[in-house]
Image (cartoon, rainbow, N blue to C red; front, side):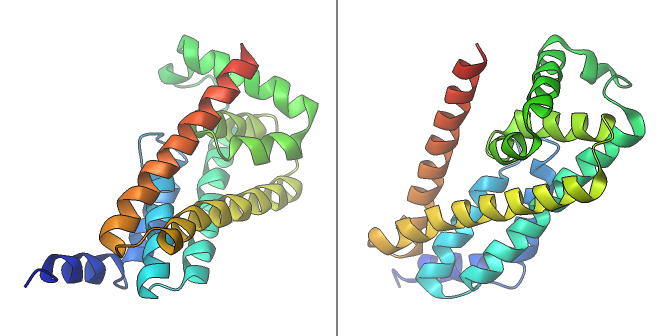
Length: 197
């Protein structure tokens, strides 16, 4: 009887819709920093190792495609409407992030696209500015796809590593991997903010 909650959790997280839900969260994460895209990938990485379903490679592929799609949509918004049309784009914090993104893109697009993939608000700013600046689309898409694949591998690997090292099945591996992913993300964000200041 004590295995029933574990079985229900495993069945729901390992079901066929888990990859779809994860992908929707990852795309949404490109626009809204509160959407837990990273958490979803990390959790499914842990589930993939503890249950075998969905396969880890499918988690990585779906996460990479969804991340690249979300970034490309932000790029298209920047391309079509610029970075000043809507009121939220003129808020002081947003203007500061967009200015930072412009300076970073001028310094080296490949490096900034790879780095920004791990910092939620920076990612949004970089992709909007890349579109508004009319960065060459094939080059942009190639770099964003590489960055999204690296990010997906990293996030899934965090969950998979925790699930391999921490005993207790999905009930333990998922929360531990989520806490670890959030902690690493917060640390990266802090480092980026300090380097800006």
